[in-house]
Amino acid sequence: MKHTKLGRQGLEVSRMGLGCMGMSQWYGTPDDTESILTLHRALDLGVTLLDTAEAYGPYDNEELLGTALQGRREQVVIATKFGFPMKLKDGTTAPVDSRPAHIVEVVEASLRRLRTDHIDVLYQHRVDPDVPIEDVVGTMAELVTQGKVRFLGLCEASESTIRRAHAVHPLSVVQSEFSVWERNLEDGVLPLLRELGIGLVGFCPLGRGFLTGSVDRAESYPETDFRSHDPRLQGANYDHNMAIAGRIRALAEEHGLTPAQLAIAWVLHQGEDIVPIPGTKRRTYLEDNLRAASVVLDPALLARIEEVAAPGKVAGPRYNDRMMALIDR
Image 1 (tube, rainbow, N blue to C red):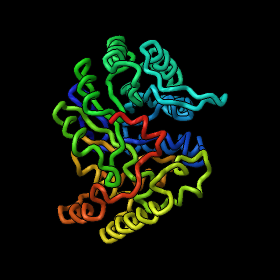
Image 2: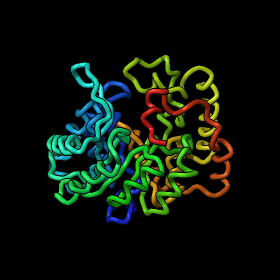
Image 3: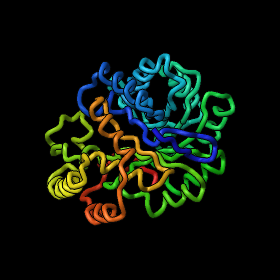
């Protein structure tokens, strides 16, 4: 698979990555055996960027990768994250916490779970309003100096936060939701990333499955499934948005593509500095998704996609109120 460079610090990754969260949390019942086979298949097909976090499980996803990557560590770029509120196994909730001492503790724990001596990309998972970003990135920079981390990133950060962070230590990447379904970065964050030479890693390029037309109404999912809380899957929003997904699906079929391939190809066509990380825990979906890397969308088709799913056409916010409150915008 073709590679691309993100940022100006030397980070190079496959043109598409793999989001690993769903292997351990939120989307159905985990299947570690199939997930490990999927991870191995991804490496065989040239995927190098694997995205995880301490919050996924919590902890289970990092442990899964640590197991799966034994003997293959040199083939991958591991990205993980700290600082997201987590419901722990004992029923308590750990808050957003980016205190410098805590960052150091989390990185040490992540290294143990991942069974490695370094993290390739370390993200702050959500901006902590109680800790100045200068202190956060200063601590992350010390971990780079120590050789425990190679490159730095932020997730769902605002333009002002990105500028302040980048002034302390250069960021290589920012991760945010980005798809034909979710375009909130286009007017501010994305131009800033290009000004500063920072790459974008886009999660949920399939709109949490909606762009494939394969999701049901929110109320059909159990409370433990992320989709049960998604405003875009609720009530009249679901009906409105499913009509858009249907039009995307029709465009895909007209061009001999699956809806997933069309949606991912759209992201890839937005620039070499953008790497989508569609998530899956099944080899069949992985292989279907990766075929998008060879899809060419001509200007006429891109214009038709824009007509169907231009900014503002999707109904409902991308998160519920609690989750939206964590976004630094």
